[in-house]
Length: 75
Image (cartoon, rainbow, N blue to C red; front, side, top):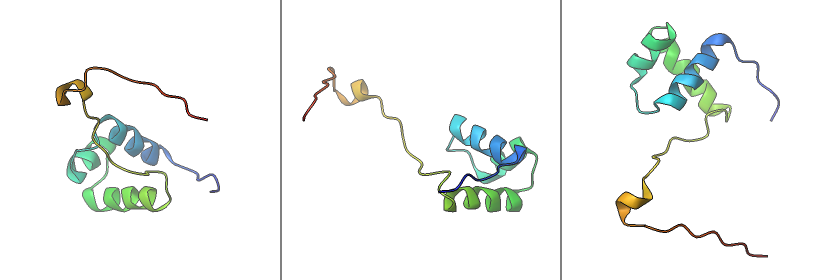
């Protein structure tokens, strides 16, 4: 994929989403200095370009009862 040119608002959107991917579009827009509609358009464009690949939950394994970590190398 070719390098995209991002402006300061795009970079600010990415930074805010990395810090808190669960915030609403309205909250994100407020943090980056936009109104909600253009913020959503920019976020969707970042998703469609592949810059934002996914949203996920970082789960605490010990909270699920997994007490050990195993590393395996298969060749």
